[in-house]
Image 1 (cartoon, helix red, strand yellow):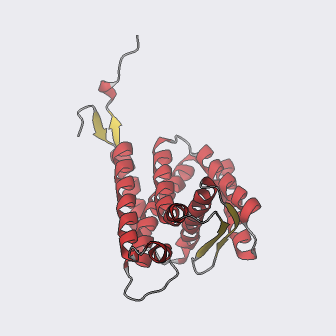
Image 2: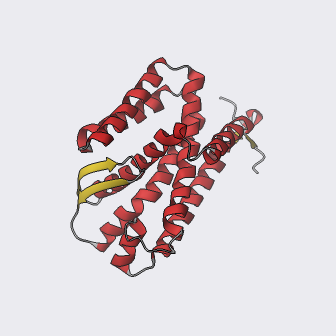
Length: 237
């Protein structure tokens, strides 16, 4: 560890507690909305990648069984398909890392929550076409907006920290659960789609996405947990 930095114990404890709660109570109903929210992050990753490679997005769907679907169109290209298919799982990890960084830096948490509410509202207006997704994503936009406006600062920060830890954990859990357990071929995952397009086995794509996600999370944690020491600050001139 750099002598000019020290471990931020309070933030480490908060992130660890949030991750433990997420793992222990993964399938409980209080965490159901958070799981759906991370599914929305996954699908938003596909949508963002589609737009970046010159395609268009027709709709984003989140289903009650925690499935998701992004209906999009893009010029036929193997590179485009690789980018778009990879952007779901890797995008979830990136979203989680961004939330980790924001949660560590936010003093009150109001503006990050407003940004999250704006993202949900934008997805609702532009891409939601079915009733369930409309109710869920619209409800998230409303709930996050109300929390940003009326919630206590400690509650806003606690929600941000939990969302950050949960989204990173869920991204890695999702890759393991949906992609690495390939004893029975399903044909419906992003890895399956790339396996058909590239002839590279689905498990190879899964392991690659998992490694990238782990590296991103590790680098982010190292960055935010090692806080500068007070005595290492450069004096003002």
